[in-house]
Image 1 (cartoon, one colour):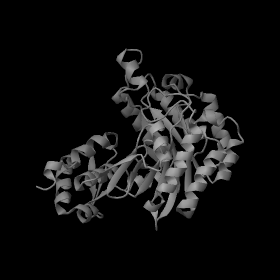
Image 2 (image 1 turned 120 degrees about the vertical axis):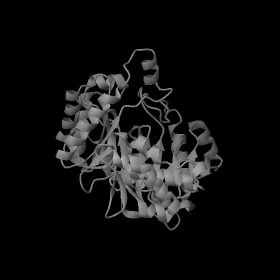
Image 3 (image 1 turned 30 degrees about the vertical axis):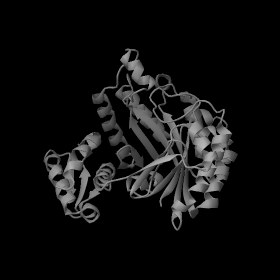
Image 4 (image 1 turned 90 degrees about the vertical axis):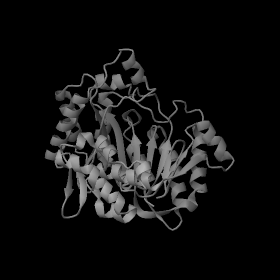
Length: 383
């Protein structure tokens, strides 16, 4: 068992690009926090005999909770689960919740030892377009204060934002690096259905993101961070040695995890389950000691496809020997056949010494599309 993910479904306001589950009302916060702790207790048997290595507060915006509320949840984990001596405990946080410098000392006392701060941009025009709750000055101030208490800090940045120039994107990266943080998570702006951003683009209020611009931003990003000695260990993640996200790495390597909270997903190696994405129904169910979740058993083909997708996104790639061991020679042969044309075109490569399939630098921006070309269709899995 790798870890526990805890979804905090509250935000001060809705970012225009976000399609995650959250509520801007804190009216039922106390009841929901009680439900989270009850779910943790009810699901303790899922991790019997297994060590919990990471605890990750995601959302939503977990930093809307105060330190004592976070401490209560962490203590519930330690009460019901076998946690290793020094687990990685990550809190996703937004700069507007970090304006009081003393909050970082309070976080540290709870056992939190890693912060993932949602900066997104150091330019106010970008933050306003995305409807972020903080401004550029707050972003810089919170990082200055965080660095006094925390060493393990990750910054989130978004590229491909409409009207963002190459110069502005480079300045964003350089500003982040000026704070000497050991980890960056950088994502291309995507337009999800039913979001405010999608509506604004349809109405012509906001210009649609340009894939060519995003591609160029990605090239700048990888070049600058490589020169700054960051390891590009996953498609969107860059870390100094020793500072890779243990929580996310476990997910990409296919380890088991438990997801707590409304909309949270879990994986036990064979089955995937997910909680209802509705705060009221989540609370109501757990008040009756019932788990508000659905479950599906993944087919061999499903697990193969996920292994390919997550493996290609990382520096560890996809081991052909492990594919054969886990799924059979038929799947290995299929994967090699599907990859052949992309290898010829320079998007993929096979490490001859270790028989591992990797994305090349040329193919990195196209990773998701390349992975889908390698997927096994259900109708072919038994042929």
